[in-house]
Length: 210
Image (cartoon, one colour):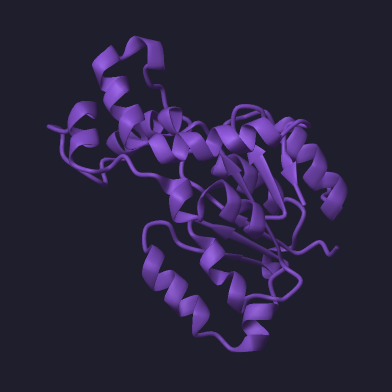
């Protein structure tokens, strides 16, 4: 086991908090990151680097950074965090609306669901089984502490994870949204909910580890 980490940042799963914490343990020159606002071009630019450049980082972070794994150092350890898909989608909508980068003021949560912004993200990563086969460590946004303790011990990280939440936005609770809206959302996210619940049921120590 090496201390090389690739952290795949799934949106609204405490990824900014985890990234900020991980960066404290690695010199800046040994870090590499995908650009969330220029994602696909930044991934392609990364792939086009020389092997020496691609193998240099000890820490790789960012959205869809798992796509870099085949090109990164062969001793890289891929890790990620997940969240219940309903809560993740609600948080994503209010984050996008706060940022003002994704859609206009006329977008509401019901429309957000109808036009296809709610997606089965874990299915994109191969579902629960595919994620088990890909990641060395999976944590849960709802309680990061067990995941953080395991990562610190396994990879020799220098600091404890901070309690502050980065990029957190205020949003309604599930019980505060119309019942029919949540029912529609759960129907759309049926596959991801099943994958999340499967992973959660196996996380007897508060994280998944292989």
